[in-house]
Length: 207
Image (cartoon, rainbow, N blue to C red; front, side, top):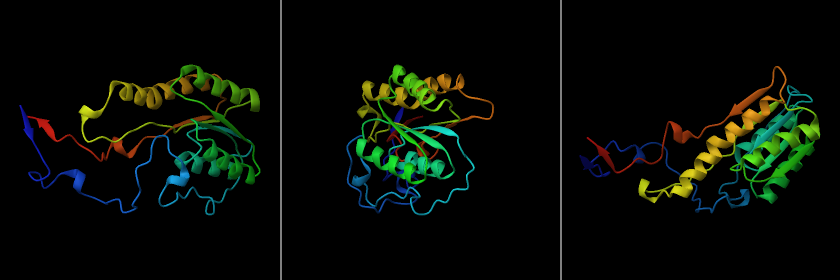
């Protein structure tokens, strides 16, 4: 039996606890760009200092045009790594990431495309190896997630896109990368905070 558990009936509703967003950020259409962010993101452009801990390594980072991906790209470049910047279609953001990597004295290779497609995932690995002759680090960072008021708003197309981007792509890229990696190489997978601290819970539960 389903019971209505509205916020008025539940004083412990987790959606109304914890820190509140006070940025005043207006909704941004997918995939969004850095210039639309309020306030602007801090990717470590002026704060991160490298110590050559990744000297002459090659890293492939998905979603490296902005956000966490750009921060990782900047950090890796300042640690001495060349960086392959995988992104969907945000060419302006990707160009800025390229500039930051080059300022660190490292080579940047931007590659646009949709990691929902297995063929593109395989081409990312092949092109990285063809251009640099090695692949030392794979960072599966790109992801797709939309916010809804309830499960009924999630379409089958969106559900599939989420899994193809967040799960299938990680599998395809990791599987292909293993054949190019040497001993000591690493694959890093990121996860959303929504996995353990979700913003939204259904209004009803089963009892």
